[in-house]
Amino acid sequence: MIEDSFPFSLKQLILSFQQKPPVEDIPKDVARIKVNNTISRVSFFYEKFRNAIDYKEEQLLRKNAIERILKRRLVPGAKIEKVSRHLIYELIRGRYLPNNAVPETKTLEIAHTINNYVLLLHEIVRDFKGQDYYDYRKWILSIA
Image (tube, rainbow, N blue to C red):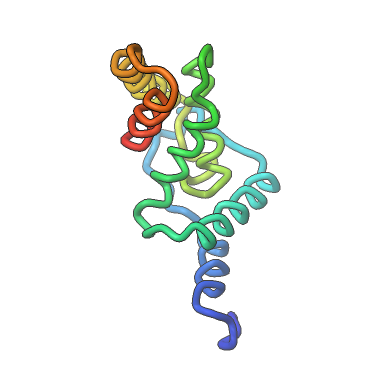
């Protein structure tokens, strides 16, 4: 039971922490990605705290998390498959995706999508330097 004296945003935080994300129908024989529950709880709390401070509309929360992760992970020389795997891990830890439900094959699909954005990024920004480069890079990552 949540106390009535708690502010609405704190009640929402507590309720979201207690809810389990829905599980997609995936065949039982498909390997799934699983993360440590303790780390997942800490990451989830961090994400909720961050979202409370940096308020965005609910439908933008996962998109913004993906953008932050890609900005941090997508550096020159990064292996796209590794970036896609870490992206999934971090989304599961933040409870944007359910634990032990995302099939391993999704990493290849996501790597293919990320690779398309990387190719677009290289094609568009190859003639830009300095601040223009960073502005275009930021824009491309925001539409990913």
